View 1 (spheres, each protein chain N blue to C red):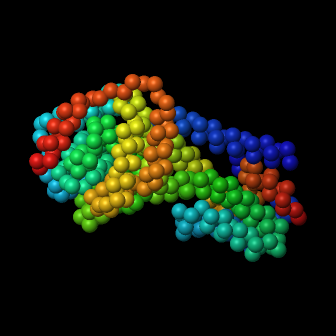
View 2 (tube, rainbow over the protein chains, first blue to last red):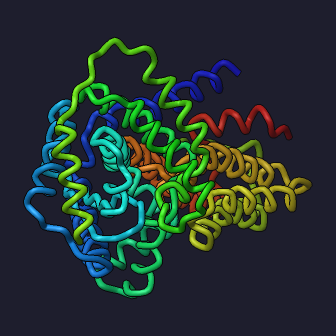
View 3 (cartoon, rainbow over the protein chains, first blue to last red):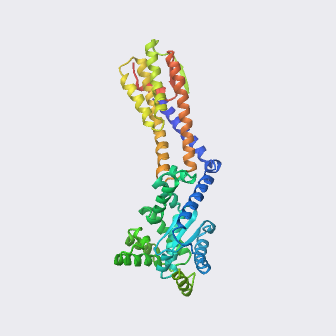
Length: 267
Length: 143
């Protein structure tokens, strides 16, 4: 009996010893896995962005671009996020919507900017989408929805058309599951606080749009319609913000934000 | 790791064939149903049940084959469900996963080689005892 126990123990120890040694090796680097997955990300990002930019005018107005770029720069610098990997696009549309695509593409509809009363409200939504990118939610969601093999076949050009359209709808019009949304909100609040932007504005934005959605049932309020449990989210954001003594600041002046909205209205 | 011993009696031709088949069962099942680790265990389990009233030599080797499949089932199942979660859920490919799969493959390859060696020798009537499983079988399987 003792011999059996000893030999069993040796076998188990051997298994875990081999596992421990192999665990010390960075297989992802040796097998170039990161590079392959980055290439897939890039290819998918391009495919989706090409599809979305056909749906509305890509706003290239220099005033709008530089204003939004200032907000993005502030958030990225304050949170040590590599800004070069975030590709911010503004599309002309009445829909109040924003979403993240693979490879760091963030699409913001002009309707959402017009619905934001201040730059802080817009920053909240932007931080939420950056959080989805930073936490790798976009690829996780795509893999969960359509599977890795389908995504790979899309990047190699096989049966991509219909699947691309279907998955594009998933990315732009349906929320992530509750756990991922909660994670993105929590991360967004951290980004906002570090950027000295008041997270309360983000909560208020959600609350206000939820109320106007209840009143009007506007189809354009896509971002709210697809992000359920608004009350719970607002509560969590306010709770996480707490009684913060940090003095909040504005990246843009009220006038600049109003000017951006004025220009957008002309599109 | 593997030792050949003299069995308590000289097994007959028919016994040697049956004992050898107990190892072949796991190999055939491995080829037929590679992705599902439980199939190997079931194949050896059914063979064991079918031969539980057989001669001591046959029972002994059926038991050793079955016991080895139990531990392989454990490590293979973890690898199997980990792979499934990477393909279908939010789990991502990592160095830890690759390290685990390599370890599992090493153990499976060792077990595969031992199974072939034992199947060949048992067919000749040679009694082969494996490290750990041999002694464990001696405790469970009595003449």
